[in-house]
Length: 525
Image (cartoon, rainbow, N blue to C red; front, side):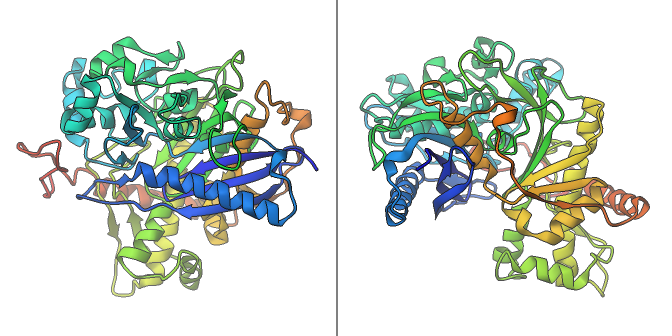
């Protein structure tokens, strides 16, 4: 039997454990468990860290059972990689192993006034004050501001910090710490791709930065040790895979870049999940964006390997707009239904939907924006709205492609795509039409987990996966080519941009709003 590699894929809405063949990259088996999100106040998004780790154990055990049913020896699993929702922030007690608060999810907006306070003390109130070090603007998105909020507002966190019991981590750190022993000498680490999303990490020196930590007033002893994306961090102390090394760790978007085999400068992938995330590999050069994109560490494939950087554009709401149409509005009963509904109209009939539920991310970074639907007439019906929702995902992606083309000076020739929404063929065709370039979807859709498995299998001391270009397996794919003329595409895109302007400056933080609640102002500025 060929050697196998496992991957834990802990996302915003579910956890999965997948097992791949290290020679062919074929997915052998997997198990998935949903994760509950809670919304204690408007704009707040939390998850239970204990539910997250329980779901990891459950998925691993269930997958091992399925392997046994296939008469596959679980001893063939030579390593496990971890990939995770990034920026989501956890603090736990290293003595008891108990979380000190719920995980604050990347989408959460409670830190808006924290962000404004941090910007106001920057020279010239410049939200890009630390961009030269971090590649990131001040935003509710990144972990440092979420951690600052926890330190300011949660007594149990403050006390644990004072008594030296607190540990901070993103989801990868929590999972690795728990799996390698937890309070019994669990390994407290993260990788460069996750660290680069905290705003506490210097992407040039590749370490935690004293100036950044003192600006956010975060004690450095809380932070995990930063390691490469591909090395043995520790060994499993629990589950049926006890003794197997954990040897790969990548934030989900970096993992998808690796799983799409985008190892060359200029290669670009877009992942369509809860949000949309486009990464363009820029090689060993960290390009600072002039057009609202982030500069991030894509991966570092081994202790002695150089880091690779990427330009990233993030859209907060992609698949989440379908969930909103389903759960909040009852317009569809399942996510799959939206394709049929939208196709029945074949057009949005001049209706434009800007789903700025959490403000706008790249390239605007406008937290005051809110969702709008405009261009409505008496003729507009739910199928036009469904079409407009799918178009919104494509328009947001187009804005990021335009920004990337300007920053890198090299126009995109094709876009590699992955993520749950790519099952929607209408969406993929719309995307090709709106971009004017081919959209390529691999037939094996689990590229994020594949990337984590590749990093784990290639680690020194594991060496069951070869990453040199000649050794990479050929992955079959489906190609969507543009089918409408450029003028029509540009006309629709111009209207979209007009709609985006209408969504801006909606929310204001009034005097008297505090860090415990979202903006109290609900009027138009």
